[in-house]
Amino acid sequence: MQTGQIVAIVVLVVLVALVTAAVLLFRRRSTTYKRTTAAAHRREAEQRAAEAQRLTADADRLRREADERAARARADAEASRELAERAEQERAAAEKAQQRAAKLDPHGAAAPVDGPPDHRGAR
Image (tube, rainbow, N blue to C red; front, top):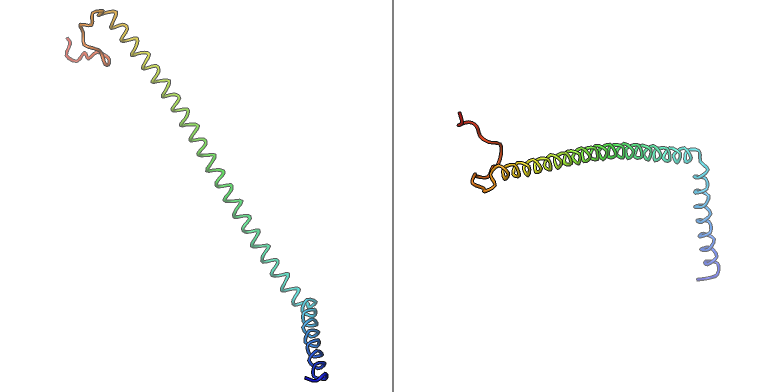
């Protein structure tokens, strides 16, 4: 290759780079490009706002469900406590009944009493 050909190729490459830079610069300054870019940004912002709203609604729903589960758990704990109290009262009543039975029949001749006496056959 001769020197003239090398210079011509370098000039062509520089011209292509200048044209590419000019097109990109013009495109960025273009009103249409700015409008298109702004519209794309608006759509993205709307999508993000909608997603944030959906996530907020989901978080509120989950918070309400957690509150309901906690209320049910508290109610279950209260019911369990009441059942435990009743069971303790029944145990105490059963112990008292056994003590009374032991006082009435100290030698254990009678059959053990499991519950209240059955008066169906007695008249």
